[in-house]
Amino acid sequence: MQPPVSQTRSFTTVFLIEMWERFGYYGMAALLVLFMVDRLGFTDSHANLTWGAFTALVYAAPSIGGWIGDKVLGARRTMIIGASVLCAGYLMLAVPNDHLTYMYTSLGVIVVGNGLFKANAANLVRRIYEGDDARIDSAFTIYYMAVNIGSTVSMLATPWIKDHWGWHTAFAVCCGGMLLAILNFMLMHRTLAHVGSLPDDQPIRWKRLGAVALGGVGLALITLYVLQHKQLAVASVWTAAFAILAIFAYMIAKSERSERAGLIAALVLIGQVILFFIFYVQMSTSLTLFALRNVDPRFMLFDTTLFTWSAAQFQALNPIWIMLLSPVLVWVYNAVAKSGRDLPVAAKYALGFGAVAAGYLVFTISGRYAIDGRVSSWFMVWGYGLYSLGELLVSGLGLAMIARYVPARMSGFMMGAYFVATGVSQYLGSVVANFAQMPSHDLPATESLPLYLSLFEKLGWLAAIGMVLALLLLPLMNRLSRQHQRCAEERREEALQTQGVAAAQ
Image (cartoon, rainbow, N blue to C red; front, side):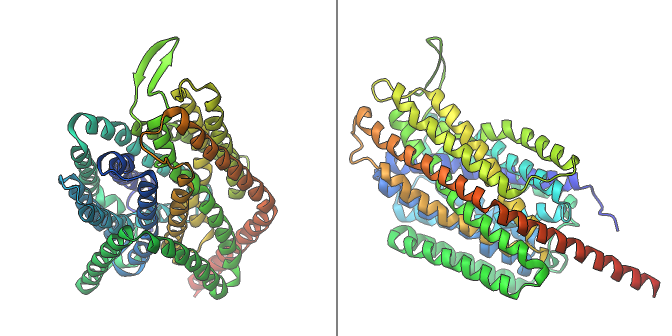
């Protein structure tokens, strides 16, 4: 039976919902570290680790949300419930209350909402393009572009709103973005009526909904406690890392022979994702604080000031570059597919780490041209550009990797495991950012600059090591990919034979 609507219309609905959800999240993300440092008086170290613990939970929570979407409430229902909870979390931040317990509780609500939303939105995209490997890569690259359209607008807007109307008004705008995401779903929900998991097609079970609500309250309280006790965050990160390994070991051991190669490939690639997101978290931590203290906010051309950005607005360079580069990569992927070849995901990962290494080299070199401890804003433009290319090749394909290598019955949970892995690296990245922590907020720019340059040089070498490891693993990954593809073709042939026998009877 043909689906009632086209793949493109269904994908467009999820694309728009994701765009407005990311508008809300990244508007908050652009401000939070600076809010803690400038408004609440946190040290760099305290702000970095708080951000790392929060984002670790933000990314780990979808492991539970994916299971809830697959088995309990349905992917569509869970996604829209998550959007509503996120809206409540941003609304709490918009209330003028700077008490730490209140802020941590607000962040706990955001963790719960993101956990319910994130894995299920991505899972719907996978289900829309199920069985079409070439289009899955392109679809997830475009889907990743939705993230960056929303984040570009909010990262440019919320810092400006903060400067003119205050912190809490800027957080209120994030809440407005979530309201638009919910409205979009209400207007276009029919385009997703045929897409979802089994519970979506069944009447809602109120006991299950109540259990999910109770679990959400518990997770918000756990977040509050973890943010108040950072040593617990460290223990949680390592527990999560070992849990991922244990889950994959169990899945691989219990899987059918035809599924094993794909699961092993997914495990190797998730390990590389953990390394990559250490670089990603620097945008909200060390790179933002570097922009605050050591970057000339003016964009100059021939001694003329074109415009000026605040420190938080430099984060918008990442989504701007991704929007520029995404169509180029989609064209490349489609051209390669039409030629009868398929550039391996593992090769894209190696290229991605190389681009990240080049980006941090640009940040490091910028110090040679500093004037009174401040570097030109154009170095941020080109450094972010190279980093963003790497992000598209690694993170933008992370979800596509799950869709390609993991059986459909495990997809929701495995997408959750992917987000747990990114959560682990988010906290590790905040620890790395503290290698450039300032002993004092009053440190002159000429003295803070060497601290940041030293960190960026180390990160560049780490990315280069990641590239070498990805290249060394390439033969193994190619072999696993071929095994996975061969087994998938055998399963399709068996399914066709079964259908033929059934039709003959």
